[in-house]
Amino acid sequence: MGRGDYNQHSVESKIRRTCCQKILEYFRMIRFSLRALTYNSFTSKSIVLDTAMEPIFWIVDRLSRKIGPIMVVLVVVLTTYVVSFFYIILLPYLWNRGQFGVITFHWFFGHWLLVNIVFHYYKGVTTPPGEPPQILSDTNVATICKRCVGPKPPRTHHCSVCNHCILKMDHHCPWLNNCVGHFNHRYFMLFCIYMWLGTLYVCISVWDIFAEEFFDAKKTFYSFFSGGLLLKTIEVYKATQTNGTTLSPETVEKLKNMGGLSFSDGMYHKVVCLEFFLCIGVMIALGALTAWHARLICRGETSVEKHINDDERKRLKKVNVIYKNPYDFGARENWRIFLGLGEGRSFIRHIIFPSSHVPLGSGLSWPHSLVHAKEP
Image 1 (cartoon, rainbow, N blue to C red):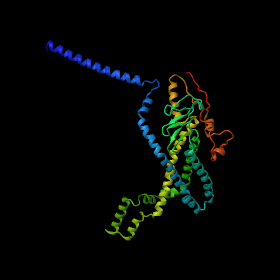
Image 2: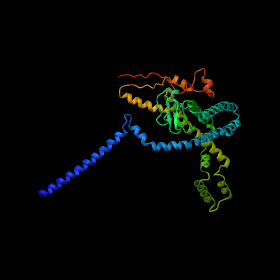
Image 3: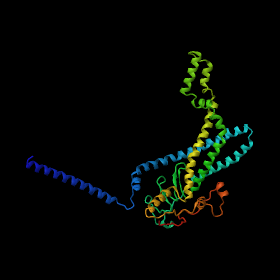
């Protein structure tokens, strides 16, 4: 390669390096500009992730508004089904066996549970959770909600579904079609507790009927597979093996009669099994939800505050500081405050039996426990 070719190659290499350097420099300038325009000392990976998930949150919020009334109707329908089962099937079943003492127990205990379930669900759906006033001087706080640009007292958070701030917001519950906040949090929790007790009570009460029906293998098979292609094929095959290519009148009648069960017997079997499986499924799911919220109440925090407090604990742990929830006064006192037991109210009158008493405080200010710091 001659000297001229070498010089030409060197020039071309230098030009390529210069172009790459300029492109890289432009890229760095653009990245620096974007970071300069969007810089915030409070920005974190979680905030960036929340921002990226905003379109999904928007869809979920709109969907929650639409399905809320449907969920309420579903709760009413399923509860009516379970209660109707007691009147139509369980009580006559016990009456025919002469268990009058058990019937008396079911009459009083069952109706006590039913009244509490219906009352607390109705109050949870219809009671506004509480909103802060729009006049800043009425709240005595300086914090402003960045979404609705209104005063934001302690423990208040913005609900994107309801589109306004909620006092001591816990979460937006689609089953209530309402936010769970300061003024209806107790109704929500007691509804969960009484509904869980109700499903446990139903599972125990109907166990004998369920065992008679479900553990009869032949009855269960014919009930759930009657009218199905598999069962019909088996019956036709057995009949043709016995009678040749023709079906006897008895076989035709048997095929029409739901595989050996009458229509009423088949429906009775399905209703009993559905009652038990529905209640045990709700009992497991609702039991986990109730235990979760009970744990939060014992710690003096809401569902929203749990995530905030967990982040604070992690942040302060890096600087050797132990964070304590300022609204945690111990499990017993937390429950007393949550249930509104004060000012002459009693547990039996205002918790065991339905009560519309308002919670303690206005929800605009809260008593504090101390924040303890400890150096290792």
